[in-house]
Image 1 (cartoon, rainbow, N blue to C red):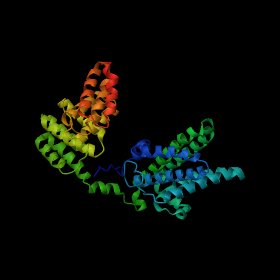
Image 2 (cartoon, one colour; image 1 turned 135 degrees about the vertical axis):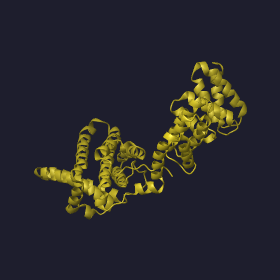
Image 3 (cartoon, one colour; image 1 turned 45 degrees about the vertical axis):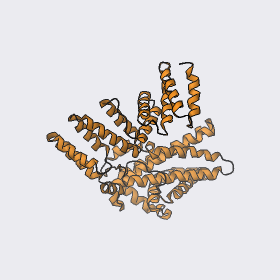
Image 4 (cartoon, one colour; image 1 turned 135 degrees about the horizontal axis):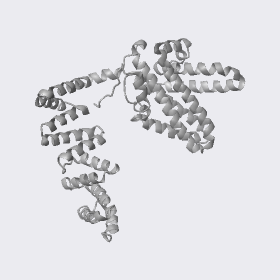
Length: 415
């Protein structure tokens, strides 16, 4: 089970605010904000553009409501798309915010003198309406001024934070309206769409943080801490502290305690890191390499290939010839190193792949990748040609034989 990243209930709001600026840009948040921003291009479709835009806004508010509930439950990172914690709240939020915008336009046209009353009312009421809708899904309850008062009173002065963000969002809409005419609509739609989505998710995340801090006042029980406890994360934190203390007087005993835990189930990175630190202190070189093999494979299985690459480099500092002992693990790290521009590492891993698994069906892929990296530099092009010749002879019927032959013809003369 992947580690559940939680936020402590007593985290100061100032710290939540500082970290919150990056919330929409983390994990699923960035992918969702980007997808929703690009989806605003649907508004250009003839005939159905208006309906498509409405659907995009509904999806935006719905995801923001999910972020609010996710944060209120104590989770540190944005939810994946499809978690569906908000139910039908997205539609209700969309309609209410569109209605608020229509009301402002109508008031500015028919009774502009009343704007001084309507604008502060909407700015103060909308955060309470949003929170009520996200959790109860009841528009009548959300539109009840008594509900607004109850929610605002429960938050005290902190309630003005989402109010300020709503003002910023309104200003953003005004700026977008004025400046969008200066940009091609094709460019303006996703650009401002991303800014709107970022601010909406940010605002709802902070509202969720406020609810999390005061969950008892609203009769809520955050689930993240319960799940973390059920998965043994609290036990891992205690073990980490105990092992650090024990290592001062008896590092071998601390190693045994950590090793027992690492054999049981997926463990968090701090336990692995302390284990490696203690192994290094004891000069247990071979054990460091064995643990590196195990941890790298586990990280690949958990889709943490970048961290696995860091562990790999640590192991290569001990043994320069080190490579993972599994073809899938090694292959994924070859591809990642190549994508990240780590040419020497990609060449080392790719060559190791060919040595250890020369008959694997993916061997020509990694051989060709290594040849391209070598061939990019004139001084190593003869090595690339020699490698291509070996691949062509060993795999005459492989689907990549054409690519191998093309490079071989291209570089043979130059080599």
